[in-house]
Image 1 (cartoon, rainbow, N blue to C red):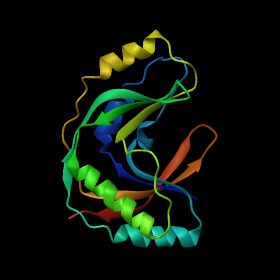
Image 2 (cartoon, rainbow, N blue to C red):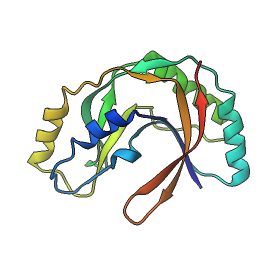
Image 3 (cartoon, helix red, strand yellow):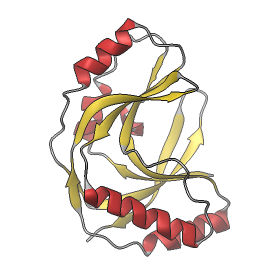
Length: 177
């Protein structure tokens, strides 16, 4: 099974973000139910590995906090836009939690994530080169600012790739105090 660690978002925030979708050529919009803020992508894991991951994550301690989603941006691969996202206002508590999760997973032998952590919520994946409507989208969403989102737990999700989109299942929630 494919695993990742993330913060689930309140349904109201997910529906607001899903409402940003419009007719943008080449965009595959993420459905509201799949929106989340990834803390660590793990990838394929066998059952025994998944149990070790669960134990490692259960040992992570931290306090609850709030975060704010803000601004729009994109990721590129090979000079081409690959994803559209909404970012997160700088938040030391979020980075601290992400570091604790990374450390816990490295202790059980998972390879360190090479990419620098950039907290975001993916809105769409791009299948075609972008046109002028892309810049219009980013400019119109760049001033977006969510209300404060309370974070009281993080979640281990499994991901099953379906024909149209992945199906995410919350496997275990880990409380923050």
